[in-house]
Image (cartoon, rainbow, N blue to C red; front, side, top):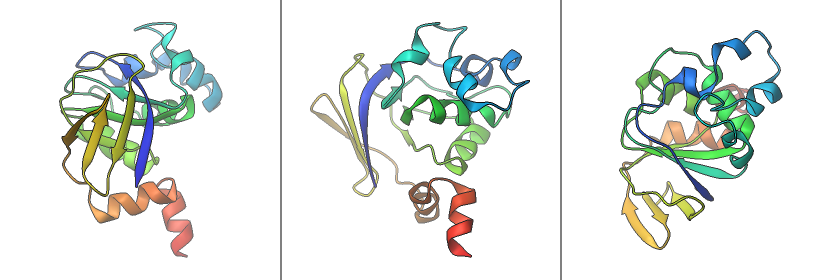
Length: 156
């Protein structure tokens, strides 16, 4: 599995309330969530997420276990998130929603081309390559299907 996009750089400790504020969760309309992603961090950020790879600091997705955070990022066009560490529940929510994650501590320059090859276990940013821990075969199957629900539908 291979994913690529342009880099969007974020600091460490991005919590789920920064990803999508609770005030927007009264609606189930994912397109509204997508337009308000990271609004309290940087109101212009949602418009730069289409076909992006977020490169963040440690502890991405900390805070509440709201599944809508992963959904909102995927709906906004994020194709992958790379960080040195993730909150455990966010990690599973993202995989289950078909949003790939890679663990790596990378320097980031906004807009650089990023390529993640999950099969080879490498990420390339601006010509520099780094190894990443592999995802399990089961996680790769879920991601390839587009998420856990789609994975189970294909198995039936």
